[in-house]
Structure formats: C-alpha cells, structure tokens
Length: 217
Image 1: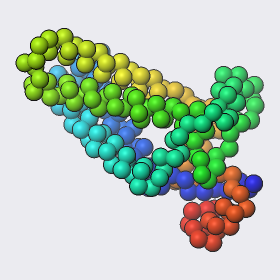
Image 2 (image 1 turned 135 degrees about the vertical axis):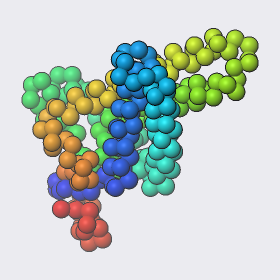
Image 3 (image 1 turned 60 degrees about the horizontal axis):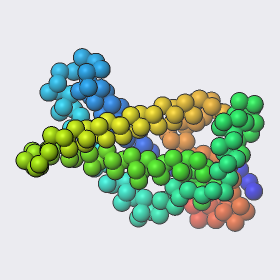
Image 4 (image 1 turned 180 degrees about the horizontal axis):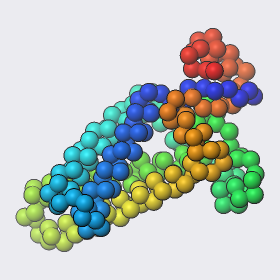
C-alpha cells in the first residue's frame, strides 16, 4: 500500500458541507432566539430567518441525496463492524495515550466505521425528524382543526427541539474531533482543497495516475 494525496471530496461535497454548516448555525441561532435563550433578534425576524434557512437546507439536502445516489457516494456511509471496536477503543482510550489511529482512509472508503455509523444515523434518523416535524410545524394551519391538534403540536415541537439538540451535540463532537490527532488546520484542509492522504493499492495508484491524474498528488 502507498499513501498518496487523493481528491476524495469533490466540489459539490465541499459546497454541501460548508453551506450546511452555515445554515445549521443560522437555524441554531434563530431557534435559540425563538426559545428565549437570547434577545438578539425580535420574534418575527427570528421566525422568518429560521423558516428561510430551514427551506434552504431542505433544498440542499434534496440535492445532496440526489448526488449521493447518482454518484454512488452513498457507499462510503455504509456502516461496517470491521474495525469498529478498534476505532471505539482508540477514541475512548488510545487517543489519550498517543496511539496511532487504527484506521487509514482508502480510495473506496473515506470514512472510518464509527464515522460512517454516525453520519448514517444523522442522515436517516435525525435529519428526517427535523424535516418532518419542521414541516408539520410550518404547515400547522392545514391541520389545526384536527382533534387534539394543540397537543399534537406540542409533541411535534418537543421532538423537533430534541432532534435539534441532538444535531447540536453532533456538531460539538465533530468540532472537538478536529482538535485531536493532527492539527486543526490539517483536519480542515481536506474539506477546503478536497485532497487527503489515502492508502492506495498499486492498481488504484496506477489507475489514478493514468486515467485521473488531476485526482492524485
């Protein structure tokens, strides 16, 4: 195996990542304002900002789902038990002893087993909860005449807020992980340039150098 710098995050993936980050920050900021955690926005502005940012994020997610399946990039997010316990042990014990990370990125799998599992849960559990409850809240006027609508709205609000806090926890953990191992800049650089160090088989290296020279350094 040879370690080379390979383009593993394409332009759309980088655009998706940073746009999603900005929109989630806007949603968290406006959402905290709606819940009275700060008074930096008046209520109407907070509602408008939250609504427009949510709709923009929903459109971005729809495009990202289309991109994941048309490019078959969804395969990188399939969880696997192979190496999972080693990665878990590293983050709970080995990282504090200066041990080497047990996982090396591969051309065909850029996420370690724990990352893949976390991202999958984010995409198939938390994000759909946010979508569904947010849309139910936004279009409450369409179902407000149903029996016990106010009780159902309260339940929707609780689930929506709970999912939002779970996503916030994921963001905090994600940022914390950028401070471990390599320097913060080294962790962030791949999502800026698209290139990261990847272990390649001789066949993969030969293929990239011959057919995709712009993807390898």
